[in-house]
Image 1: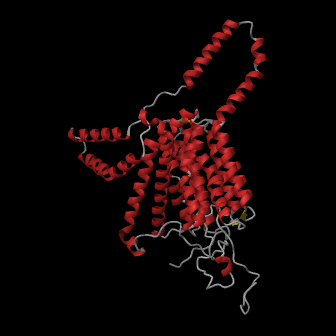
Image 2 (image 1 turned 180 degrees about the vertical axis):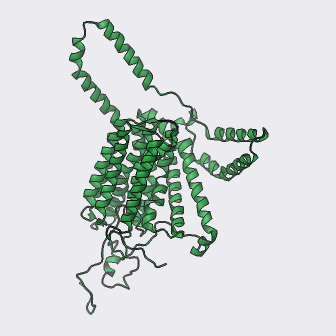
Image 3 (image 1 turned 90 degrees about the vertical axis):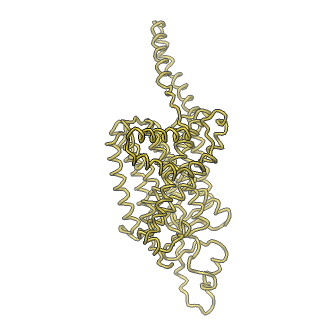
Length: 501
């Protein structure tokens, strides 16, 4: 009850809302117990999910420059740092992370699509987990819904368009992994929707999401055993057919041997030597200087020298902190190397998102639009880089599986884990969720998966530049619709942004 003598409408309590990705604030940003004696006890006792009627943007640290300095040229520095972040992700993914994942596949007997949906997804979704943890316990930003939905749409349609556009020729996509990962992702969407539909998340609901994410990983890791078990059952069911044709055993044996040999030859991947980072740089330098000495374009040599000198500190720092597991004596450290790659990728992706956030604020782009466009693309940079690299090698299924697997883990683990930890730290306080715009978000996420499968089905599970252009156009249309939703064109689903400093 209100304190005596205070004229307060007790029938209108403050709204308690957060976003789908737990990026909203959980304290009253402009209130203190001294200023608000009615709700001061709730604020003083812990996070009571009381937020102001506007959004504050504290997802990233403040800028080193004033807004006036940024508008007069200091913003160039943030473009440079963002470029370095993209470059770090590209180098780590191509020369260290993907070779380490290949070693994990060999050691654990995993197929590339399973490794992409598990280990690669864990690494590429680590930036979102880091951001969700920070926004759940520290910051008061409201970019979360847009970032979650925007990055999920990017991982489904944006990655498919990048794979098609970057491919040197038609890429054959395995139908079974795509359908499997799509169904699992849609199941994760259904679970998350059921959890947040009533506007609050209880501790047991968050625990269920974490357990389901672990069950997803266990299911993916057991794919080989399940497939072997299914083949054995199929062989038993077909044993009668084999016996009825036993009248010509010599011919059957010959045909079986030829088929088995063909399967072995087709299944054996051709060895592809991985480039050593230091050797690749040295060879590129030698080629560039040789071209210049033979009358080539001197400006190209100068540009390469400048680029090589500018990126040398980054490459040196990476080579000193991440091992080259392609070397035989370092191969056994592949698990440690995987963790080191994840740390580098997470930090670089966070820096990229931070730089893009400052750039967007300087250009006066709203947080809602930034969450769907710039921040979603920045957070999905590891998936995009990995997909482009693998598509250049002709392995497009890995990129698709990585995107769908990362979305599944984002829905279950990256949302459920921070919610569960917060429920344990502050027991008895459910995590409230802004659910007014949830139907639009749900339709968008499901539609993106359906469109991807329809495009692949129409092209007979082949991706080339034509399919890449088509999926990019559809992705752009999805982004336009999401921006309109975030800007409350279809209704008031998101609060206006605070104008205070």
